[in-house]
Length: 76
Image 1 (cartoon, helix red, strand yellow):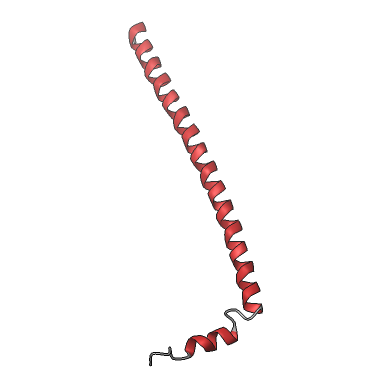
Image 2: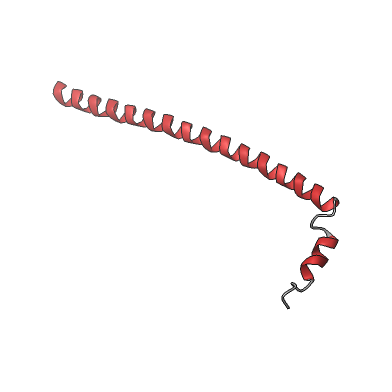
């Protein structure tokens, strides 16, 4: 293998390495964004569960709320 071929191979490997490093950095950024999104959604679901549990205990959609849903609407 000549020096020119070796230089070409090294240059290609360096290009590929640079591409992979950039790709990994982009993947890391995307994973952090997804992690933040999952955490925000987790907190929101917990808040909704708490609100739902609180409203069911305070006369919301519990047993009484289910009975109201079974009634016929006024236009029947």
